[in-house]
Length: 99
Image (cartoon, rainbow, N blue to C red; front, side, top):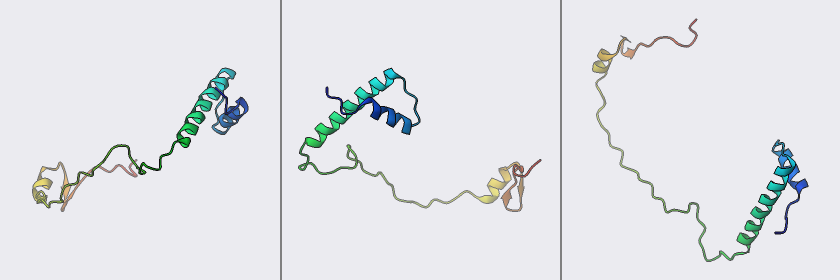
């Protein structure tokens, strides 16, 4: 395997990412990044002109339903079930600005 990236490049990338790498990690990441670049090179050498571009590997369909208006609940009934109400609103404990 030909190294397409050297340890100085890995150290520079690690510095940009604010990572502290040991010598063993530099060697490991040099190998890993070199393999990644080799795979990208192979992918770039393939002729993909006969394949249409895609934004997702699986065929997707939006499953939407029609909006249907349903009658709401009666306000008076709901306010009657509330622990506390005032006029036509629910009354809740104050939480903002409370001591």
